Amino acid sequence: MPWNDNKGGKGPWGDGPKGSGGDDKSPWGRPGDNGQQGPDLEDSLKKMQEKFANRRKGGGGRGGKGSKGGGGFSGAGFAMFAVVGLIGWLATGVFQVNEQEQAVVLRFGEFHSTRGPGFHVRFPDPIETHEIVLVNEIQKLHIGTGASEGQMLTGDENIVDIDFVVHWKVNNPQDFLFNVNGPENTLKSIAESSMREVVGKMDFQSIISKGRDEVQTSTRELIQSTLDSYGAGIEITVVQLDKSQPPAVVNDAFLDVNNAAQDKVSTINQATAYANNVVPRARGEAEKILQEADAYRSKVIAAATGEAERFRLVFEEYRKAPRVTRERMYLETMEEVLGRSETIILDNDAGAVPYLPLDQLRRGEK
Image (cartoon, rainbow, N blue to C red; front, top):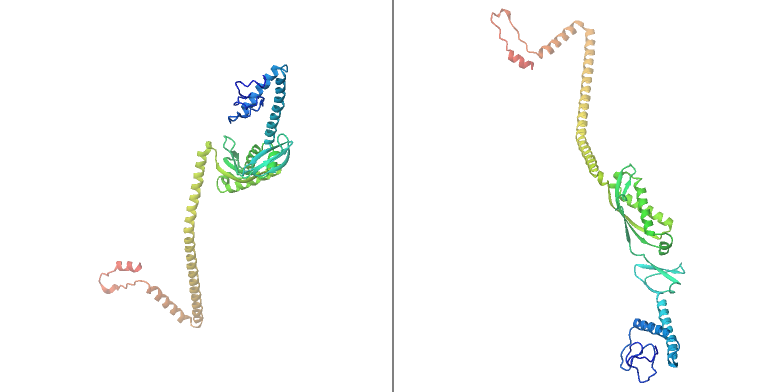
């Protein structure tokens, strides 16, 4: 199709009327004298392709103007394609990195540099490419939500159901991208393995009660040391236990055992309180009895010692005057014995029935 086929006074792209010069056959469709704007680039490229296809079909057998116009279109069209393609290719080297991210730039597939937040320019694809890595935001990995994923064997051969969360972030983007294949899956495997190792060294009761902090700390340290040995470029900030309890199928039995253990502790506490109350009193009573016995012993010893001394003195007197001493001892003994008893003297010659006050005698005996 020759360039002078203007379809009713319009240019080849459907532009407005051309200027006064009849040789204005530019394929880029400059605006006419009426000031209208040309079509967008996509429509222009589509029409250019149609013209170029028609030009090929028409061959080079057309007259001088047609051949001349075809040569002009070919040079300008390819120039436009080259410019647009070059701009698009160069645009692949412009990229933006957000505040929480870092970009790792690769040159021919190998690490070249790391870029921080902001706009950056690199060599276009495929000379250089880049990977965006989230570095300054704490990410969470939940483990133990599966049916058997959280069931672990304790050191005392019990099963505990554990759910926990690993808080982590990237501290080295280069290592994160290149040292480990699938870093997040690797982190999950390491975290689960580390938790099983820590749980396997502790008893069940500690894991579900007072030992939770120890489980969290030991697991975090073990995960971090393993990741560092791999050079994974990941930092573990916190390991948090969400759940540590017996499996659901044995939970009722565990509650019964736990209640029995609590009853045991309560009974022991009550017995201890009773012992703390009774034992001091018993010790006080025992001390009192010991003191009374000691006083009685001292009293008896003193009395016996005095009696022995008295007997010794009497014996000395007896050796000097036996008869007088015997009568004196007899009288003193009778005085002591008869002085403690009720004595009734009866006269057989009185001729009357004697009256015995038995009730008074009994009271006297008591």
